[in-house]
Image (cartoon, rainbow, N blue to C red; front, side):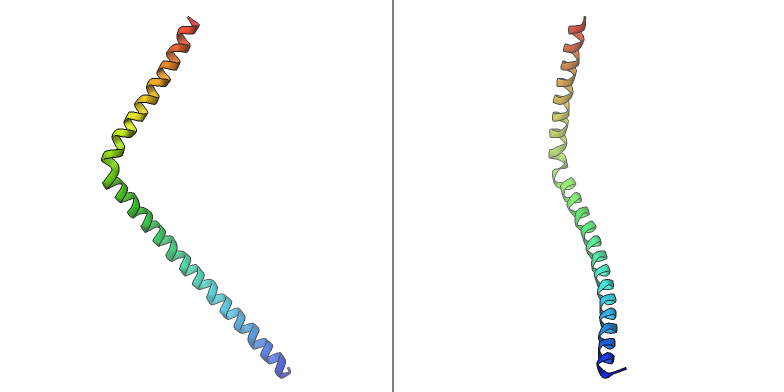
Length: 83
């Protein structure tokens, strides 16, 4: 094996080792981001529930009530047309 071949072999092995450690690092970073993302989402959800639930709930019920009333009116109208 010539000196040039030895250098190329070392570089190739080094590249493989660096690539493997880089992949492991990426995997660890991805796990970290997944955890951070879940924690962030949970925190935002908790804040929304605590701060806005009392305001959102009555609005939601009002909207649902309006939609149900409209649907009942449509059904009633269609039933009255048939008879």
